[in-house]
Image 1: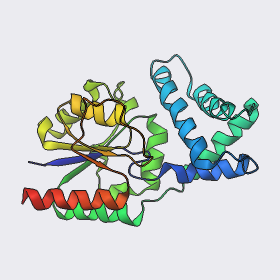
Image 2 (image 1 turned 90 degrees about the horizontal axis):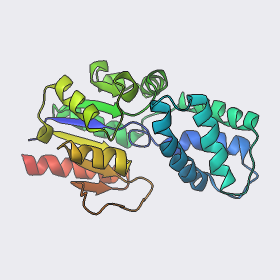
Image 3 (image 1 turned 45 degrees about the vertical axis):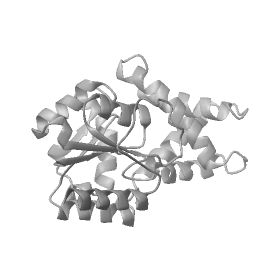
Length: 237
């Protein structure tokens, strides 16, 4: 029985590329890389460096500089540090103006109407992630007590510990939880290893690297996610 649905935040509840595009066109409009292409490289380095920030081996500022510097270096661009900092500032500024799409709002409205308990589980630094949650106005659907940010617990996805913390806070069994996220390693593998159900929101059409992990559903668009969720409720009822 489905009691709880939790969402990842970045590139799941909102399209993270839109904020990235703002910074891209301010700094790399003359290049022929393409915003989405550079974003893919940016995410690879961001994910690779994230653990070092969690362990205190790398400051957030250094990580922010490194991920865009390394991403553009893949395209033979040497980015000075001051330009990397300026890019990050514009990226953060754009993130203060993110919005839920019409379809994602409909999804949350539908789940609320079905009396499903909703929550968020996101990796990241607490203040930064909370600013995004406020910009998205998610308190209308998800109470603050159900908004779980990795930095608040000293754990991060895909560590099993953070999934277990959420179970305990919500007082539900693993098999009663569905988790929706875009990152295969952090979201899908993490959820499956914790005994949760999973929906892989493969917004960027990434390849499935580990065939032994099979999410319950794979969707590529918000519209497909909505249809999948409605079908799940039809089957359950």
